Image (cartoon, rainbow, N blue to C red; front, side, top):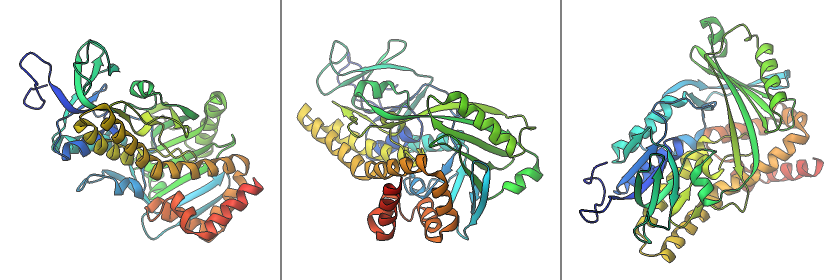
Length: 405
């Protein structure tokens, strides 16, 4: 860390960064980029060495593409034009689109590319760094405008604002007091396959509505590798593992050795969960921001990360606690007005899906407007919340399904 990039204060004091971002996933990289583009001194901390693997399907839908830094080139492994839907392996039906629905990426490349964009904008990166806690009071904090980020080795990093983007088991989230009301277990395997098998999947994904309430599985093709995964409520671990094994066998992929097998917990925030504490903001998985029905998190990470970076700049400039609090509340309002509304609709969809997966399957495969809505959402022409807000048909349909559920 050089004093050229940070405010040295005086010769004997530790340098003070404008914004310190903890976690270099899509949320953290987006926050660091947004703050650096605004001309602030930004430090991005990541405990792993990059690139690193993440349990994730790697689907990049329209809202994700729209939230990327200008000029960012997606490292796409495939472009999806068709979706096969099945209901626990039965009633399979494939719907196709002339235009690309969404793209597929490998997370190590995607995340590393976003971090590179943040660095190009001026952010400084430190990897292999574990944050043990943040302090806003006490001996490590020189004044009320400063936050102390305490590393595992005892080093203290000082900042005017901190963004927590350190994942679903976030230490910064614990400091803020993030509360979750939905925790799900995702299991995934990366399966290298022969060219003949890969060609059969090229440009097409499979979504299988699963046997456990609220569960589903997916196959995402990425060149010579298939990403195959399932997700369901935490507490159903044994059944979820069996679902994945049955799913892989049913697809005829049991004979291929996975290159990677992994698991991950996703956590959705409760409505009253805080998004800040003092000069500390949280975004992405650390804030419990993801779509409750599909558990799609990349677009939520990119969008909330960008907002967190922008508002962290304002908090860094705040001269006192009152002003910092005002800016933090504005950040929370921005999140709730956009992503929060989408999450609310997603919760309704999940509740319906848990009770009536067959009805949902029949609707999306047999009712053309439902397929068009799915296509519009994945392409980014609208969002789930936007569709319900602007389409009387969609709104009435969801209300009717709510009643029937």
